[in-house]
Amino acid sequence: MRYERISIVDDAEIIHRIGELADEERRLEEAHAAAAEGLNRGERARLDQLQRTLDQLWDLLRQRRALRSAGRDPESATARPEETVERYQQ
Image (cartoon, rainbow, N blue to C red; front, side, top):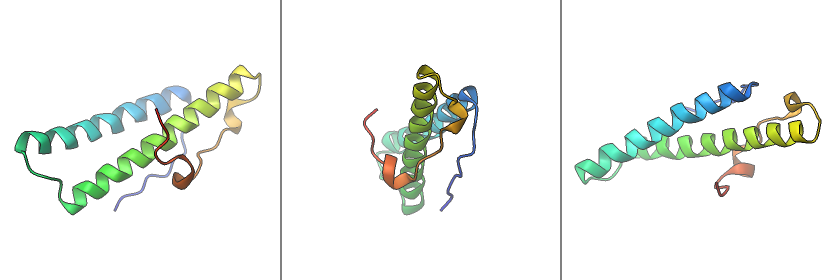
């Protein structure tokens, strides 16, 4: 299983990475919907990891924006653990 370490510090980079991962997630889901077969174990694990990483990236972006709005340094935002942000409502 491939885990992604989040070390992005620029909003544009975060948004770009979100787009890349969302595209991969969409391709994975569409490929199996079209074939009318379920995901294999590896694909299911990858999809789960994509979703957790996306949750972390969205959370990081929201933290940075909130800090900036409050007149604080957005660089002080940190990626929170998967367990904290997992399944946040978007």
